Image (cartoon, rainbow, N blue to C red; front, side, top):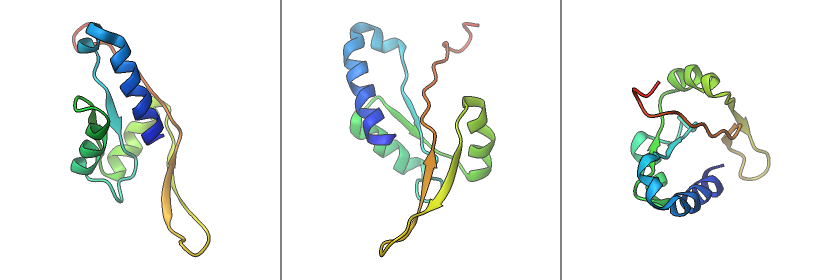
Length: 101
């Protein structure tokens, strides 16, 4: 999801023109083993300085993700460079501004 989706967000943000001030783009990393809040923030801001990047510990993420209909787990890769990488469903959600409901 990450690079492709954030590139799409960048194009969308540009296309919104003046309305972009009403939208906040927030990227949530599910890779709690590797990403710190600072790493997630730096990654998101590489695509646009207004993008927000966040992450949390596994307990918090596992409690939060179902609310957005997202599933995530770590899977081992095979081969000479075997490692464990997170997999997750890709999901985008929109929410109204705070206090508008």
